[in-house]
Amino acid sequence: MTGLYLEDYTVGRIFETEPVKLDADEIIWFAEQYDPQVFHTDPVAAKDSAFGEHVASGFQTVAIATGQFIRTGAVDDTGMGGPGLDEIRWTAPVRPGDSLYTTVEVAEARATRSNPGRGIVTLAFVVTTGSDPVLTFKATIFVRARAGEKA
Image (cartoon, rainbow, N blue to C red):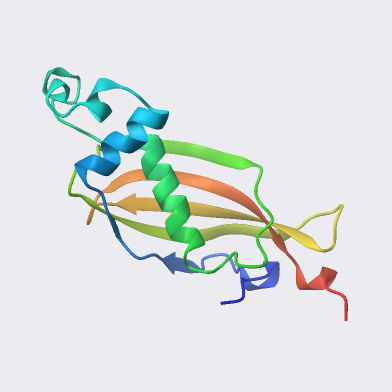
């Protein structure tokens, strides 16, 4: 798929992603590398933690949701990175065996003042394990604009 240009990102457009199922080994691997807290790395010790059970790192869920969006093809050949994430909220724990479903809505899309070939898009992510959200955040990305394409 060729990625979407700025002009294709209409406010309210929705992207539904393919679900990703997490298992305990993936949770432990990620946590050992990037978020080595006992409730992520040790299922037995996690029972005595604040969660009372083994849970995934919130940063792992952000990474998975980002990957799910990228795999839609929306930014293939047109994505130009992004300046950041905002309003990250982990609203419920993610457990081994959970499947993550991510919906992404275009919240804002505009041309940049300094570069006619680039636009700024704000995407609102909602990640669920079925019905209730476990993660919400906004991602701001840069994408190519058709206005900047050479004829």
